[in-house]
Image (cartoon, rainbow, N blue to C red; front, side, top):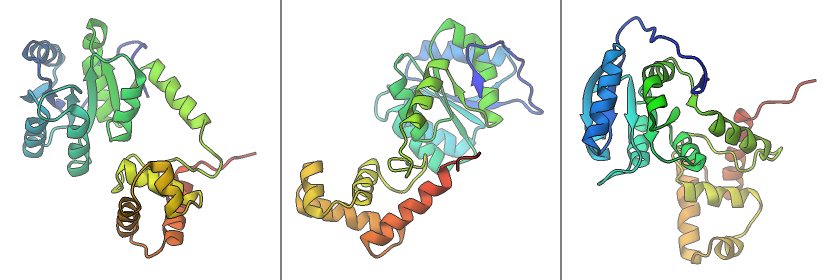
Length: 236
């Protein structure tokens, strides 16, 4: 894991890192481009919005994408979801002025491998952070790391609530599946989710279809299998 508060290390890669910068502020893009190029990183393209970012990434297939979050037309979180789904080898590092760790956790759930705040200190460390992301390391701050630790501590022993970073199920469908795993009926789902019975049945049907199962029991078993693969068995 790359500690953003730790010492700097040179960008050590056999070939120059190929990066796409995504930010709706032209001045920010220029500052980032200059910092990366001075470190030997190749900036192959720049985008001012999420849709443009997706198009450029599909065309250039970069090693790493440095992605802003708040942008017009399509935000960085939505763009990240599209990019990692279609280019699983491309790493996405979020680059934002938001200080809260909640957005960072959301970005990680959607497939990003890092979260860096916009500051002069982090700007100087960007080349190292992107190189670490390309090597498969998580690039997160100490604060966000602690949030992740707290999240793990809150996980139930049966794994209820654990969700894969990449999944065909939408967040709402995972919510429905979690409630099914608790044994809730359609009427109970309707009350808890504040949805009509028809909408609940539609969500359940979609969950079954995406999981490739034919009944709610089979859906629960499929969820248990997925979660058991993500839980670490206790030792000793």
